[in-house]
Amino acid sequence: MTREDDEALSHFDTISDIRAFSHSRLDALHSRLASTFGEEASFAVVTCGSYGRLEASRQSDCDYFVIVDRQSGTSPPGYPHLQEIQQAINEVVGIEPSAGGAFATIHDVQDMLTNIGGTAESNHALTRRMLFLLEARAIYNAKLVDRARTSVLERYIHNEIAADNLARFLLNDLIRYYRTICVDFEYKTVEEGKAWAIRNIKLQFSRKLLYFSGVIAVAETEGLDAAQKRKRLAELLALSPLLRLHQVCGSHVDEALAEYDHFLGRLMRDDVRQTLNDPEVGPGSQNTEYRELKDRGEHFSHALERSLEQTYRPDSRIRHALLF
Image 1 (cartoon, rainbow, N blue to C red):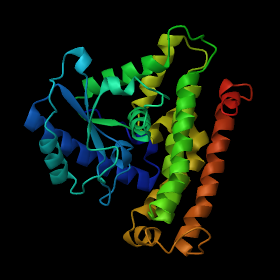
Image 2: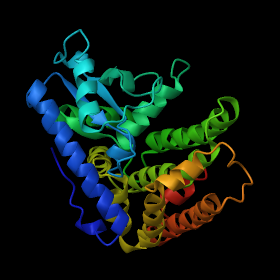
Image 3: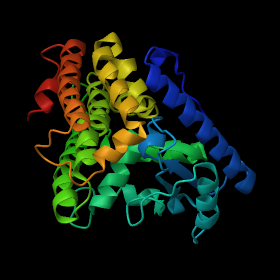
Image 4: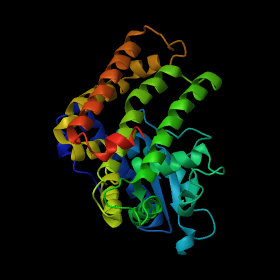
């Protein structure tokens, strides 16, 4: 299992600690799956969420899904061993993913290549595709995961695209995904009655970080031909969002990462999580824990904006593309 070089982020204490914790759990999970199924099989297992971003703590569940590629002829017609996979994750992580969501399910690679933006596409399908690109990490059969990422990027970036253009199709779908989760926040908190504060703070930090890490990956495609665009994106998207930001923006993103480090540290505390999950902490709340994170979320946003301005010149295509 490929491990990231964490040295570049080692001066952020909480980020460094949780990345070490995430690596240890994922290594254990990979070993458990490999001992059950062998080193390679006709399916892959990827994790998203905090484990995919290498931001997991002991309070984190492990969102995952299984990938097959039946068109390639390498996958059997039946489902892979979902029960054994779930059992392995329960043994290593101890916390099951939320029921009824986009995870703990099986998906053909071809499902991510069709109906993009069409009437048959569900929010779950959009979510899986975007999270697969932006934060998914292979915990079993990395070769199949790499091939799947290549296929999705080939769907977004046609050979005819000009070198001076950005990967606009991908950028537009990324923007659509980010705006969708912002709108879904209202539905989940108002109509489904889910905790408001914790979801609001995650929108302020982890969801925004994920979106921004995708934006700067697309920004890096300017001036490259189609094959080079796909190659550069594959390299960047294989990294965790935090390391992706650091690799592209360098020290320009340090201010934002310091705020994110603080956010992760607060979220690791049980008392803070309990407060943010309190249904009484809602819009306009003056709760001290919530207000402090909310205010720092605003600083985080401005710091990300400054890092974009410092990394890319005013006439860079990404500036215009984010508006029009």
